[in-house]
Length: 191
Image 1 (cartoon, helix red, strand yellow):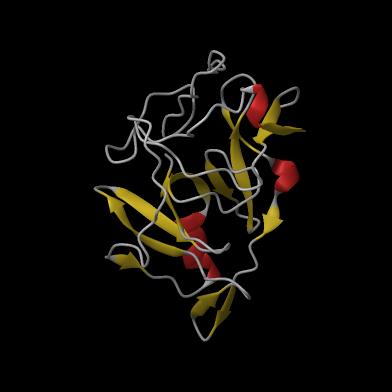
Image 2 (cartoon, helix red, strand yellow; image 1 turned 45 degrees about the vertical axis):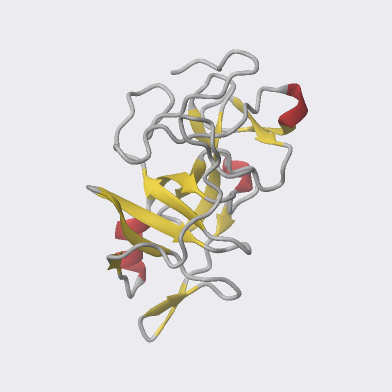
């Protein structure tokens, strides 16, 4: 397991976990812009991950856009996302693309408490990924919510929202764009 950052420092969150080496050339230095360990940014504390771990949600209902290594926010996600797009027309195809952890690389959070990204489960829920008190990346299971994806004649949709869009984000990395709040956010799949 990784360790929590020093007070005032930014958490270092590699692509697959805070305890592992970074993978993926185009998103390796992107992470949360401010530390959730700063007293001014802590919102609620929730149980997460393995027994005994806790995670803190940023005080912002929707945490801000991530930052690059120079500390510059990556506020805007290109809409529509860059081509080529990867299509899906049923739940099985969606699951093959979507199930797993996704790191946000552009845009403001789509889910409450989403500090690092999101996890999409085989049970068709998504939940925010946050940094636990031990520095590891954990899913906030208590904030899981159903995706609500439906297929009308093979066309995916989420009633009241846009369906997730998959695209080639970087060489060898699949990207995901969500617009379930009024703004788009881009993600890359974590190994």
